[in-house]
Amino acid sequence: SSSEAFDDDLGTVADTLCDGEEHWLKAELITYSCIKEVVVYQGKEDAQASRMDGAQVSVLNSITNEEFICGTIQIRTDDYSQNGQTYYLSCDASIACGHVVSLTVVGADKCISIREIVPLAPDEDECGMLWAGGCPNTLASYISS
Image 1 (cartoon, helix red, strand yellow):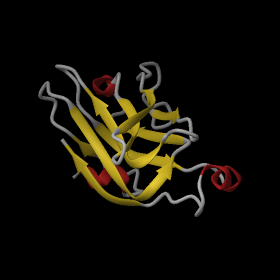
Image 2: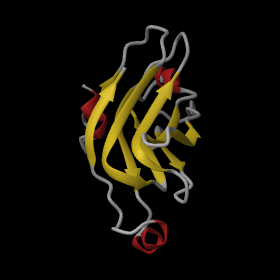
Image 3: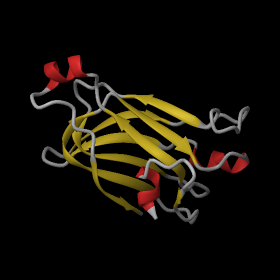
């Protein structure tokens, strides 16, 4: 289930099939949010981790249809530990604002295996400058390919 990528439990894993199509996981936020960083905990801690190499993490604004790319995961093949397979993707919180956090990977041998995806809002001081109403960071729903 894709919700396992957002359940705050590193013991669960969300997977997609490795069937050569575009694969994605998306989390819809309860409210419009600005994101400063997305932490991705890889689900595979062995050579299969390379199936997620090149995965792109973005924030989508469903009203304007704009996509803000936070970064691309480049799998580390020299460290398959949980720490070695945790990726920190910085977003420009002044523009990476929207309603959906997305992870997408494309390729014939690609697929997604995620323990957790954690979108982080800016700290309280930055929130006041970015938008009124604090730093919402609560996920409403999860969908996957």
